[in-house]
Length: 126
Image 1 (cartoon, rainbow, N blue to C red):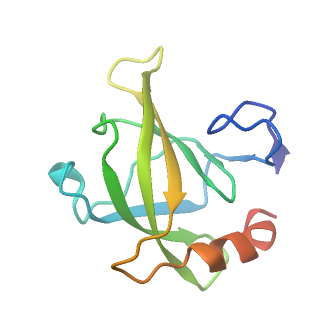
Image 2: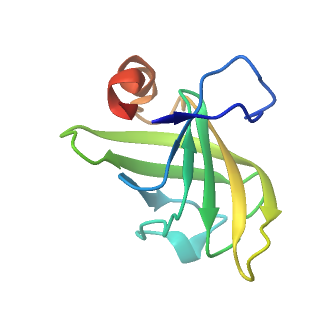
């Protein structure tokens, strides 16, 4: 897995890993992004950290929206139910392609696997 040194979520000290395959992100709820409900993100590239994702998408997400997601990592049995906020969106050089920064967070009204994700992160990316 290739480490990247890009800034993610404004913090240079976090470890980030770039994956171009093997992570499936399915939106299970987002009132601000109804077109994504029940769909798996067609991600070409994913940068992951314990705190969030940078996704390359074929569709634009709504800025500051909330996504409830089910995350599967190829080669691992456990799935992770995570919630994140869309913190930034940027067009890529390709037409109809976007980068989106998702910052993971806890929810008080719903069960979350965020603590498990953070605990298991190093095993998942290797």
